Length: 383
Image (cartoon, rainbow, N blue to C red; front, side, top):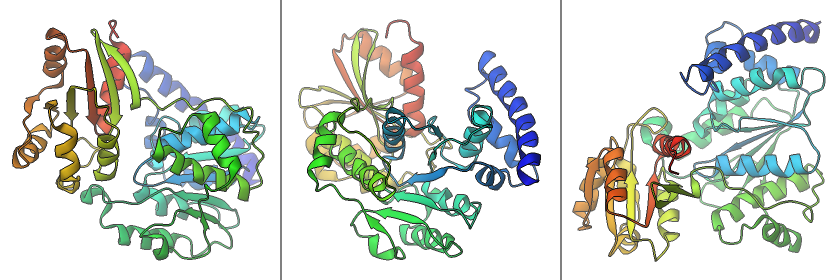
């Protein structure tokens, strides 16, 4: 009775939400990927719980401070290339609204048969709420890639976050938790699996996926590799194709004749990683920092970046700062004695780079800034 009612009910809901999403895109009022979830959250029913009950799939949630989007995209690629069907929130909207939107927009494609897998990227602060909506008689897998200090106004301290995640497990008979051995592993309740990257098969898969130059991707792939082994999901690593990076994660663009390398940098850990990967030949660096809703307003994390690494990486470079938090970062650079130019406005900075004939520009940008740049480069006719 529940499924019959749900199928009709969810089909009608999905039909109207898809139309609304299409109209938003048509009139260029947004990409329409999160509004369905926002609308469903305002209704009295717990639609997330309804969707979880309706779809009889293997559920995989991927969270962590860094690497969620790339890891979700990589797992999707491996499953799809292996012949499995997958429902996922690949738009990167990883709050409850994003998962609801993925369900509602994808419902009509799977209303006859559930996808083999539902793979969702989940914001770490949203994990407890998502899990609490999950049916207690079903099994889910949760990958916690890493946990490091992020915006305190959004997440609070890490040990408090771990306690909340632990508490959300208490009513489940069975779940699969995947961790890596680090400072916070011991804070999670057992049982859990540790990500493994020591086998020859793992190393061969990294070669096929062309991950060898990206240490953080290798680390995150070890979670996927261990997960698939434990779930007994077959993937023929001999037939997989190289992983195509998610836009804004080290991708190259050409903007008005300038070669741009764009790198998402939203907390100390990711900032340090990108500084280590900064090519020696790159002469011009743009640090583009906003404080929009996806970024959080707390910028104290700037002062947790490795100072010595920052000074060494920017030594001899032409450094520019832009965005709504450019002055804050410019002040940090001043304190460290690193010469920089604060243009504040992104368009002024890009115009300056183009007019002076820069050959390259290495950009470090936080979340909303990266999304803005990807959109800007995609729409620019001279890219």
